[in-house]
Each structure stands twice: as C-alpha cells, then as structure tokens.
Length: 293
Image (cartoon, rainbow, N blue to C red; front, side, top):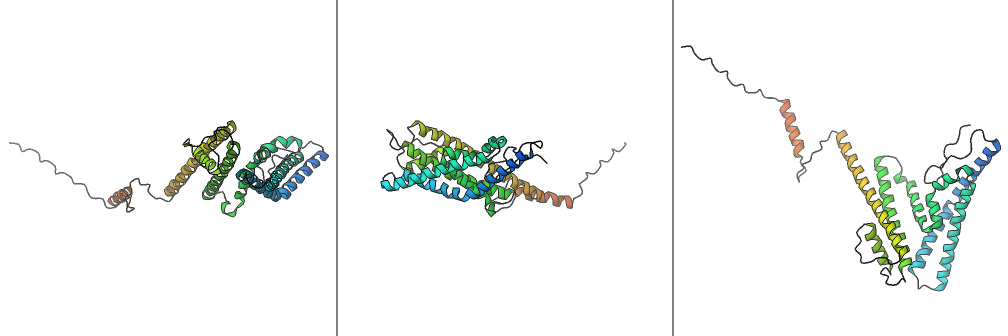
C-alpha cells in the first residue's frame, strides 16, 4: 500500500500535510483514518452552501450594525442574533473539520486553511473565502498565460475592493465616537482607506485610536502588496508580447511614426533589397608606370 503524501480538499489553500500513518500501521488504524477523511470531505461538501449563505448574512448584519446606528432597537437585536449565530457556525464548522482530521495531519490541515482559521477570529475575512469561488468560473479555467493573467487581475481587483470595504467598515466602527475623531462617516472611512492603500495619505482624515492606527498599518502593507502585484502583471504582459513578436518574426522597432510606419523596419527592408541586387563596386583605374627617358 503506497504511502499517502498529501490530501487536498476543495476549500483548502494548498496541499495538506501527510496523514494516515505509515504502511506498517495496523489495518484498523488505516481504516479509521480513511473513514475520518471521508467524513470530513462529506461534511465540507454538505456545509459549503449553508456556510456561503451565513457568510453573506454575517457581512450584511455587520454592515447594518455599523452603518445604521440609529435604526430601531428590534432591528439591531435581530441582526445581532444573526451575527452571533453565523460566528458560532464558523467556529463549529472549523472545529469539526480539525477534529475529523487524523492527529498526524491536523497541524497541516490548519496551515492549509488559513482563511478559515482567520475567519474564526475575524469573520469579516469570510469575504476573501467567497472570492475563491471566482476560480471555478468557466471564463478563468485553463493554465494559459491569458487565462492566468485574467484570473489574477479579476481576483486582485475584487480582493482590493473587499479589502477596502472591510477595513473602512471596521475603521468606522472603532473611530466613530472617539474624542477628536475625524473618521465619523462611512464616506470618510472609504476615502481614508483609498488614499492609504494607494500610499498617498493626504492627512485630511487620520485615525486617533490605537486600533484604528493598527488597521491603517495593515492597509498600507496591503497597498504595497497590490502595487507589487500590478507591476509584476505589467512586466509579464510585456514580456509575453515581446516573445510572441520574436517568434512570429516581427521586428521590434523602437521608432514608430504617427502613421504607424516603422522606420527601423524600413531600414531593414532597404538593406535586404540592396543585398538581393548588389551593384559592382567601382574600381579606380591603375596608374600607368612612368616612361623612361
């Protein structure tokens, strides 16, 4: 019986560490490990859509509680219950997954499900888990350069929008009501998040609480990562275009006029035509020897 090297689940962030013991393990133990993995996979398939609904419900409930502080108390109570129920469901779901994983592979399973672990502590991060569903769209299938680049661009833009929204919402919840606070509306929070993630920082809106400043640092780190990703995408696109032109035999001219004519290409063509129809070089007449007198 071959040793199991990795086990990757549909919702994992990568391959999970080896589980299942060694070939010398008792058959009863190997059967128990396989049964636990099958139960965990079945649990993940069964709870995927309910957790998706709960994730959306959590985001809606939290957004309502932050953006509508003057709403009736009954609505606040309702959305608070939804918030708590979804949070408990996230904790139970992740606990069941870890419990059903064999002991030798639990640490690897947790490492390969970082988004799920982080969403147990901060459920707003479930939005990033929802973005993983974009990978399953037919448009982004394939491993070609164009498909991969399109997938990265769409996911990067979506992640940036989600990142700005989550940080702005959380920043507003911790800043509003603080003494001398400047971020007191959602518009202020979104504007502050945009200029911070772009590493501009006008300074018209600044956090005054220590937790708000922590979120500002997180936002700046995210902005640097997004700029780096964008630069890498541009370099990859230009490299692929140049490679295609070289393979197709197209000249890589550096001087193009407004009409689209390539001066370097014209020079190459002129040189080629001169090689096809060479002209005989002019030979100077030999000088006659001097006459003897």
